[in-house]
Length: 274
Image (tube, rainbow, N blue to C red; front, side, top):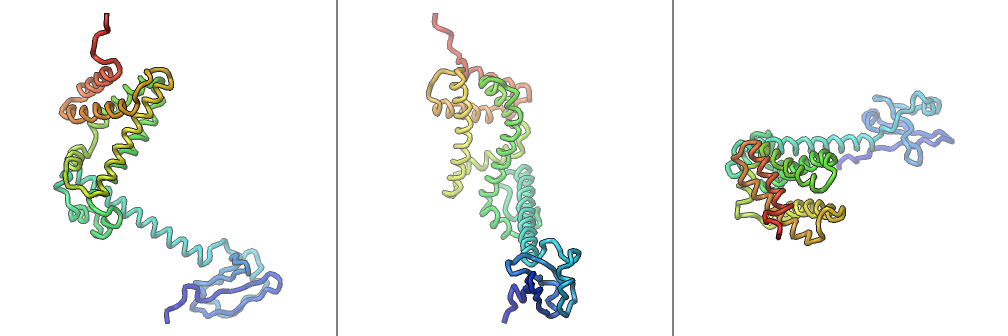
């Protein structure tokens, strides 16, 4: 018969100070508790006889709430921490490999070897290579958002924000470690339905960001009331094209191209009618 998780419980009532002896083998794992379950005293290891009421009620003998449940919680938290560390180790190893070798040339076996874990760990945390790569993209997006939010307050108007965002995107692209791998990933025609769904959610996030920014310009009376959703798509398409064409540009050339793109988006190229 398997040993129970709770091999023995102690009851100690404050009125009658009742308590029970226990086998020394269980001493380190047991706790004397009150009727309501509140930990009162944890016996020292090796104790083989009942405690006297004076010892039980002595404040110096009462420990902090560190009973069986607490130890169990510590074990759970430790396991969660280890799981989190394993996931991070896999993500870090995969990021370095994708940046170095590209998406197609990086295999799960490469990631397993670099991370020093099992293939089961990779599939448990990320399901497949596509899921792992999308996780890395979402991490980069979150980092971009965090950096942008810190900068955004420097730009007082929505027009200023659009120019600031363009500059931020241009500089980010120059330092993006997964540019090559991203191209290979998005151009890969063989994608599972759940991966397509995640990609659509990713794109939707970009469009929502654009839509909210443009709507703020309308609300602030900077822009004409217009089709915000359509403009958000056009802006995203413009930025996506710039991302492709400016990769071989030097820093200043790329920044100039992004600024010109915002000029065209905001003011157009047609001469005013006379």
